[in-house]
Length: 205
Image (cartoon, rainbow, N blue to C red; front, side, top):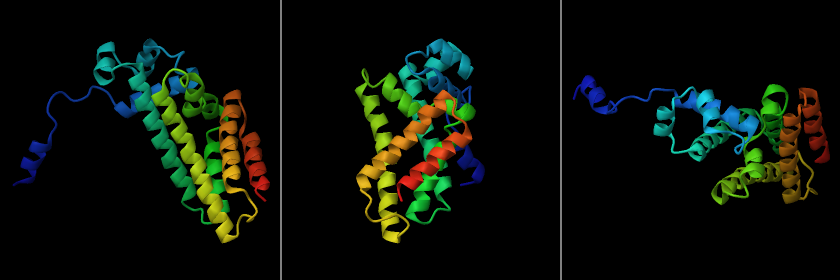
């Protein structure tokens, strides 16, 4: 079979999507992060995403569906960014620091003021959407478990003291991460956030 024949068979049927999904979701993300779920209207999303009502409802069932797609993209982007920060880290201590700085980088100035979609969702949606609330808690739990693993590694490789309570320390670091996001929403600058990161590292010994 020729290459041209393969290409012809693999070409998707029907009209192509009339917009860039990733670009549209990135625009929706900014609106949700800045305004929160409840305060965001379909009209807000249409304007930000640059879509007609027909295109929007063809791609998404409702506001909740847009939020879920945006949340997935948000979490994937954060995980990819964290992986880049962790790449040069070798010891457990270095991995803890890299993780704190990864979240610190998005906790100041313009990006910081947009806030954390997960943290915002917990306070905005948790009481009336148990399925989404579960996803928010899972996202936070993954961060906490990363810290558990890094602290265990640090104790094993000697970069962290062996007297640390692993679970409590991991929970403390999660609180530090989410606390930085709250301060970022309030308008913290880079120096303030870096000071918190360094203080958290000092607390580990």
